[in-house]
Length: 370
Image: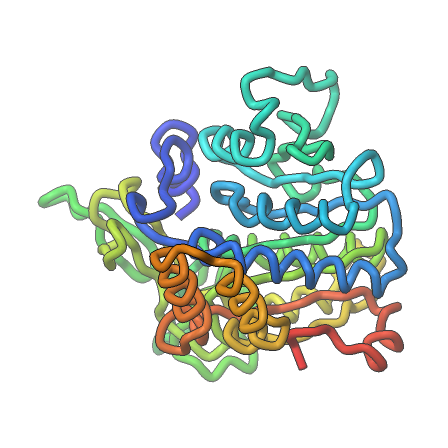
């Protein structure tokens, strides 16, 4: 998965725009501004609950086209959140998507290369439409140490997985092999245990499962930062609570695609194991010194968006709309985001908070989750 998606020269994400009607899939921010606006209001609310600490940053993992961040920054500007006390940091490995994001977020700066100081952890920087610093990083561990609003929307589903199956001899890993007769790819089962078989399997009742060590490491890094520097995490993705088995698949031209056929031409994905992410957020690694974070969720997207006011926002937009086609598109977008048969039940929301927030959250639970 890592090789197919992020190979520097032939990786699926590295040299093309894969989003929208002309790409292979559509994400919620591309459907309507309402999605990003409500996420922004939620972030402001929870930042305020933490005492509005400054300086602070918003860090998005895998920002896609930058559409979600553009909507968030527009709302932030209404709350006068901009300037030297606030920065935008994006974790992005695709040079092509980094350029798309820069044009989206920094339209007046995109044609002018801003020199990155030698020795910096980031590889690119610019100024947003609203005056905030925007920087691009390769890894979450490179981000500045400060209060952070972490955002990961459809990020974890693209991280590499290992597929494990239980056989008579115990757990074995499903690997990819080359069929030498016709040079096609095929699945095979490892002869012996592999390192991935060391995953927490003692009480596992499933006969088959998918594990993503990289997802766990990133979640633990996020959790450590939240505990040590202050912050909040919001993860939005399609997934399950540790009960699904075989979800690995490909998408091409908005249709399912065999992951082993024409690698590099289709998106590869697997449902996120939110139970595993919550475990990682509450279990520090042996060399780390931080307490278990608080987790809220998961809740379905339809419930979260309804609770934070998407119906009211739709009414406001329709009241000011004078174009029947635009009004129809708004209603259609609302339905796609909230209908259980569309995205409403498919996508889940998970929030992470530092343990010091426990008393405050008992009195003022996170909106959208209750």
